[in-house]
Image (tube, rainbow, N blue to C red):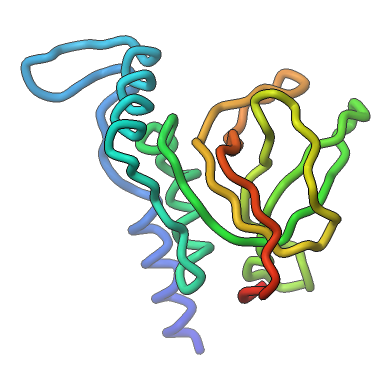
Length: 166
């Protein structure tokens, strides 16, 4: 058991450590570019190619965590995944929607994995809490109560008949 624990932490360390260029820089002869220009180019590239990253059921937690650990690689890019729809409340009293799956943890549901989801035009969700849904949208940075985090601006939202692995 001790060997598996050490192996797990070694792999976790490998995934969380790495080298990257400072934010707002580009490689090659292009030199420095603004973060906003970079995000706009990524959105345009995704729209032109129709590229959508699918978060698979088998590696769900790892793929979502990779996005959180490497947000600059995903900001403005489209992803799609399935999960449980629910609402949450912030300390300010504002309500938000999110789509998640239960992650690994020691105590019941202590590690939910997913993103807050929202419509750009504040449309109403046609789903009930605990519905299994498929979402497609772009990864964006949002701000609530002075905090910055990642969320999914929706392009598509569909309530599914069949549930996946929760």
